[in-house]
Length: 382
Image 1 (cartoon, rainbow, N blue to C red):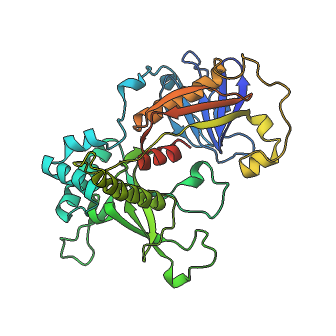
Image 2: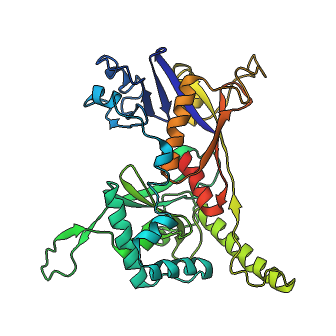
Image 3: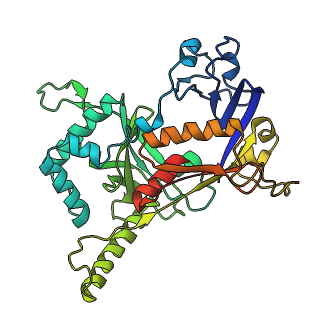
């Protein structure tokens, strides 16, 4: 479950939504009072919280200590239709096709079907295209984004994904100088493979320090995307012997087994003999509760665990005005609309948002898509 917390400050003019230590401040376009903005800074108990200002679909991030640079200008920003910015932050098939040579694109798609590695020349072409595209979107860093197995439940939100950000620079290896200059680039080797320390993740004490090396490799079935000025590359996470350390690798291997045995079955029963690949698809939904921040701070289970450990059943049950398919409260509606707009830009086809059955419960869900990409989108949403 994903827990989202709302604090009403001066209803009905303004509200704050707190999501795991981050504060999403929302204000109507006509509210430009200077005293409003400082009230959106870090709240008591969250001195290092960041602030994201949502006004008519626009966003800005500031530190907990400071205020908005130009609140009036932000408040008067024009509303942007999210349907006009669909998939603008993802390097999907359409973007790849428009930015790499057709032969490179065709070989990349064929390699996805056969499982063959991408050639070095094609790696260079893809890295150059990704670098140019990401820089146009303001990316400064890139990161292999993977999903380490944490040996138990309880993972939520950002705990589900891990990444180490690297600045988009590298040494100029063509230079003969011992102190080589560096330049802005995305090295093709580091796009497809990365190395990190695998000893920091729970492993039951089975891995000695000298075997702690772990490697990330781009899951080519899941497109790269740009978020918070970081080019994120969805990856699998394995040991130097190929043992999986993550949640993604078992899914990839299951898809390979399904593809292999499915093709064998179709061949033997003489149906669709020309089939080249079998894909699995997955649809997910996120159901979450919205809790006021002042009430949240009174609950040590929510503060420390991010989930409910104590409590009792609500006094109300199935009133239509608060529950299934009823119109969400205005503050919750603003929250879900802003999240939906960002997810659509990231290429996630979020198509449904509504109240759920329990009081304070809500749901958002996308159209189903290919399983590895869909699983990544689920974590991205959290």
